[in-house]
Image (tube, rainbow, N blue to C red; front, top):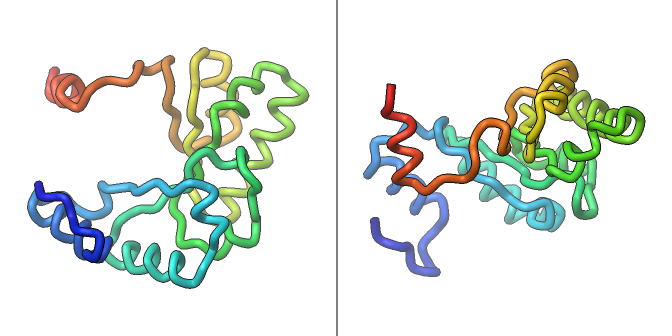
Length: 158
């Protein structure tokens, strides 16, 4: 795979990579940071919308750690809201954690967004997130971070 030049359009680069690797676009989810989303410029929205026309999924990462704007959450062409692990860590504290996590999940669902909880480390966190309707979970409870080679080995092992 060749790295794109700075002038090359992100859309064309991703389209080429998908074709070269014969990857269906819906299997690729690009993450943007909350700060990029907050820029909310028409140019950012146009680029993300163009990627969505390819079928690529768009996620906003570490939601809730920056200066979240519900206006841009509604405007951006998102598929997934990735809830920051700092919220998940606090979910064990019944009142504080649940009073934030549950409404975030409900808000995301009302915007037709999937919710991915980062940093799930305990069975208790897992159970509460499932109870709250969280769509996807990731964290050390399931696996520590692994290299691409190790991920391939794990996915093909049966």
